[in-house]
Image 1: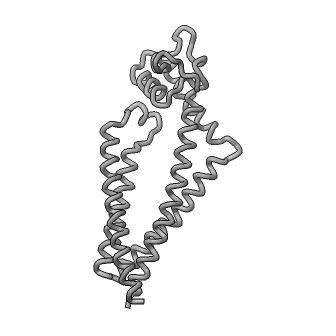
Image 2: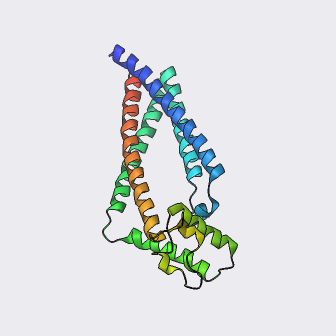
Image 3: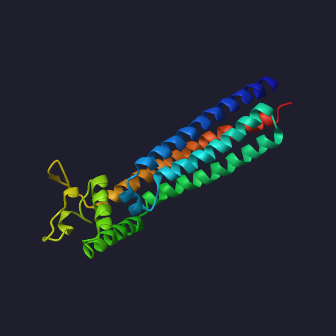
Length: 218
């Protein structure tokens, strides 16, 4: 048992050291993302990917650093607290992963309807105030980023205006509407979130197991 717990101690330290590095990497990526973030897209989605990455990175760094200290000192209180935190996160991430996959397979199309409602409101606000440069910038940013045109397609643009330059790439007109394009992005992101959440839950289970082994070392 002593040999196993000794190995578990070093595995726990190495495991958490890698997570600390991952946390730092996330913080750096988040900072770079914020520096290059498209303001038009951010205002459209009301969500900062960079800010989220930094928040997750800080949380991961703090928890893993706590685990490293607990492993080195073999402090029973620190290891127990660390393991409990991981178990709570494990449960939350399993729930998050399940909710993400449920949202993707939702048969009532509520997510599709909500996305279309948001996109329609965005375009209608611009159509009602075409001289507003900020709204035009948001529309152009969305169409360029998602490679889409109009709500359901280019036909949504008034004949007097015609599709703007942001609806074209190399003189080729985007045929996909922004509602569909944005929905595809959300679906993809939900799949990634669900998969990553489940994967992290497995990693956290291993970390919690190592922590309990080291804590019970005699």
